[in-house]
Image 1 (tube, one colour):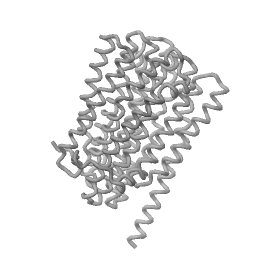
Image 2 (tube, helix red, strand yellow):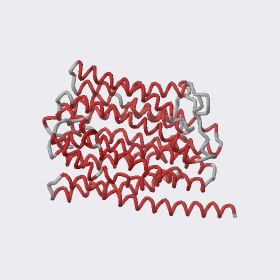
Image 3 (cartoon, one colour):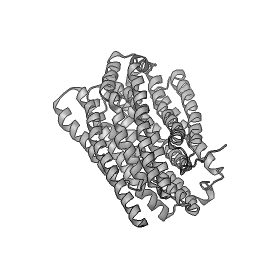
Image 4 (cartoon, rainbow, N blue to C red):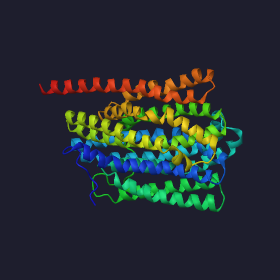
Amino acid sequence: METKMDMLHGPILKKILIFAFPIILGSVLQQLFSAVDIAVVGFTGDSNGQAAIGANTSLIALFVNFFVGLTVGINVVIGNYIGQGHKERISSTVHTAIMFAVFSGVGLLLLVEMIARPMLVIMATPKEVLGQAVTYLRIYAMGMPFILLYNFGAAVLRTVGDTKRPLYALLAAGFINMVLDLVLTAGLKLGVVGVAVATAFSNVISSALVIYFLVHEDGDIRLNIKKLAVSGDDLEKLLKIGLPSGFQTMVFSIANICIQATINSYGPAAVAGNAVALIFEVLAYYVVTGINQAAVTFTSVNYGAGDLKRCLKVFGISMAVAVVLTNIVNISFILGEKFFVGLFTSDVAVAECVYLRFKIVLAVQFLICSYEISGSVLRGFGRSMLPAVITIFGTCVLRIIWVNTVCARVRDISYVFVVYPVSWIVTGIAVVAAFIVTYKKLLSERLGNRA
């Protein structure tokens, strides 16, 4: 089976779609782990259980997304080596990345187990759901080392254009998750405990399959378990690119935790409704993240090969594809909102909250493409700090200020939701401008060196 892709030559649009589609589908499957959890618990009549899972959404994102953000460093560093033809450095980087994932995953597990309850209390989780929320988070945390291992391993595979096998791993894990949800929750009536166990075990399966693929890989990214070690030089390069992205996602999650805490103050129905709405927003967002992965990987490889004009084409095509596909997905959800929301809840109050967030947030979610795609191409250039700083201030800081000023004065949940489009517009303008300035500077330097 052919798993590698030539990113330096040939049509860009077709290859970006081929590259991105398995990532999008795979990300959707990951989200479905949580979606199935919420749906199964909801149809057992346990609205508090739904709220308990929903209350953890932003907190789990805070813990996991920082390390997932680090995987950008894998794409860029290995991508540059591929473009430059430095095969001897690729293997060392692969083994460093996987070893780092192991250590980080174990550390993350221990951290979450210690601070689960205090964090949920700080977030003003309703008392009637706090106990279940803590239980869910602590069991979910058992799978965190495997979540990191899967994401780091999948990032390695994607550097050579292999986006299909990570998808196969998630297909297997998703099926197992769904079966276990039904058996443990609907069958054995274990509630939140059942869905948490099912999700944690499914993460073990997905990570095991990805490691199997890497161990049996024939090319430069092959993993040899006996050679696992951390190279200081390789780790430094990975972190130089990955840390800004990781901190961006972490601060982004902190801002969302502040928003979640505000939503929590509106009661269990608002918490459950927000959790259901987020499922659809995240599904649409994964369209953008799939294109992001393509943009950063194609850019890093072509930048390593010195082809800036092809990098510009990658930017333009990626932006157009992301905007079009995001709109198609979101409009479909909005037009069929009663059907889609009905899959997750029969509670009228919960559904009304979902519909409100659809109108304010989901309808304009395509705006995120402006800063997401621009930021990905900048990271492909090795400029990871610039989009991170802009996004932290333009999106995260703005949201924190908003919920502590506007939302503190106006007791209306719609004002909480409005912060999303406002922050997207501000951040998008800034990051696109940064891309334009950076590209012109790089092009001028390249032309100057040739002269």
